[in-house]
Length: 142
Image (tube, rainbow, N blue to C red):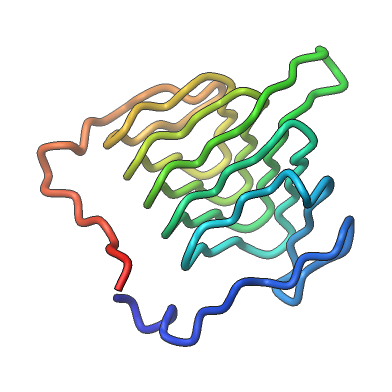
């Protein structure tokens, strides 16, 4: 395990208020937060239609995760699968699943599903590399 997770504890989440790590959730009752997650400062999560963040997920700072979009009316649960990583300043739109061990590059706009074991980046995010044969290390619950 990485040393930074040795003293990891679930964050206390208050509706619409910054956590002690300076990230925020609206509709907190619809958020499922996994074990040993890492969410960067100033990330915003709108969980109105459900957001599932599985174990060992890392989300960079200044990200936005939306389960509803008031601009185009899209809505749906967002699922960030085990051990995926979302780069800083990225946006994840409603109804999207980011696959297990997937990496989303910084400043990406994710408006469609990202498969397991790939690197995706861009606006909109597209798969740019398959990492399934690289022996990707996955975190295990201890």
